Amino acid sequence: MLTTLNTSYTDTRAADLAWALGREPLPALATLDLELNGAKMQLRLLGASHQVLLEEDRGPCSETVACMPGSSTPLPLGVAKRAGDWEYEFAARVEVLSPGSFAGRAQELLALVSDHPHGLVGVFPGSPHAFTAMLAQRREGQVHWRTWHAYPQDGQLVATRTRVGVRRSAPAGDG
Image (cartoon, rainbow, N blue to C red; front, side):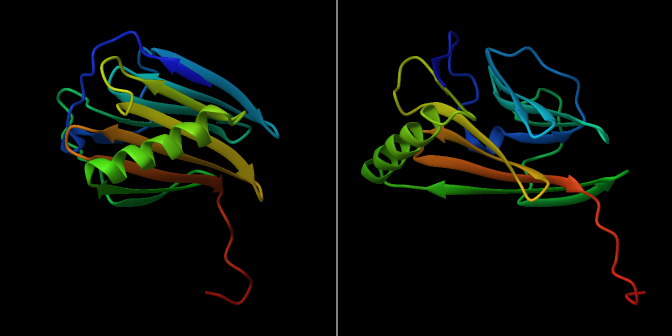
């Protein structure tokens, strides 16, 4: 689903993004509700990036990547956490692209995500390449999502990848 976000482009630098796990829902400019084989998800586009809310039998999971005033947790390159019966893995990278490469990559991502039934893209007014895109799927009993945050003025594209699944037990004999 493609939408134009009715707000100014506020998170103007990749370096301003922060990561948080377990935050309460923040005000969203656009949402997409999904059910993926029993997992209820809400993809949320914020005025400052994204939030994913996941609900399964094992409980809730909330991920926020945004410019959060007062946050001291910068965007990490990787996180692996266990919480109850959940395993959570997060990875982020910043791509720096030339203006021509950035425009081409932006068009590829916009086409991929906007036409996908589990995709949500919000384009900010003023630049067709200023966007946040989210894509979710479930495979092998795990929920996966990817996001892209585009900063055309700096040629930066922040890509994140998250996996949430049931905590695995160690095989017998591995002790």
